[in-house]
Length: 129
Image (cartoon, rainbow, N blue to C red):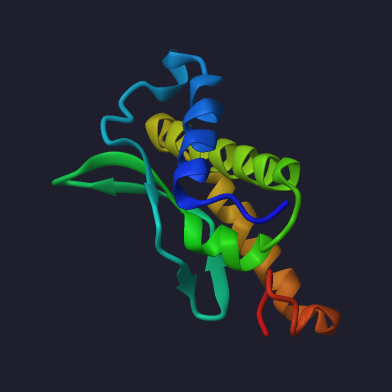
């Protein structure tokens, strides 16, 4: 199987978002957006992000280009599971923001620090090169 097209990826994301109980998307007024772009932060690929913006509101953006770079020709079920995990991860950021906590961001910083301290991960496309 070749990688899903942007349109197929968008439909898959829509199907996965439809699995989420609406009460968990409360105040996610910008909804879920699928971008064709690849996004990076330094040498790390960003698959998705939770955004709070005065103009756009609260939204979750999923970056097809980043998925395509990292997953390439993987089977569709691999794409689906990674996308599901990313959606749930970003939704957790949203729910924590509503609750006034930021535990997930702290966990991410700790995991990143541990990753950067571990030399065997250098050169892995999912991590710092």
